[in-house]
Image (cartoon, rainbow, N blue to C red; front, side, top):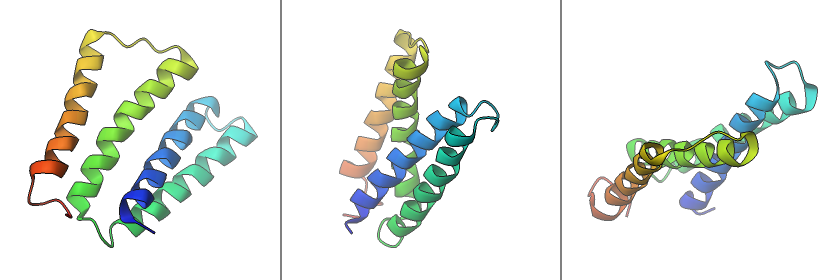
Length: 110
């Protein structure tokens, strides 16, 4: 499997698990709680597969940066969390940082 595909699956799994974490209501609801455990299990499995090919610093920068943005968007869509202009600007800067790291850094796995 392509390492960036594995990283993408890891990120999406983590976003789903984190969204389910809120829905689990402190692990008092069964199916959201199961989704949390399965989602995080898949996330860490695919992240570990990614680290065979992508340096840990690069993988984690992508994981955390895109995770923050996607979780914020999921919270906005699913739970009505408000995103003001500073939040949107901050997320844009996070995405810009990930792009700079991947496109211009020699630390990247290209």
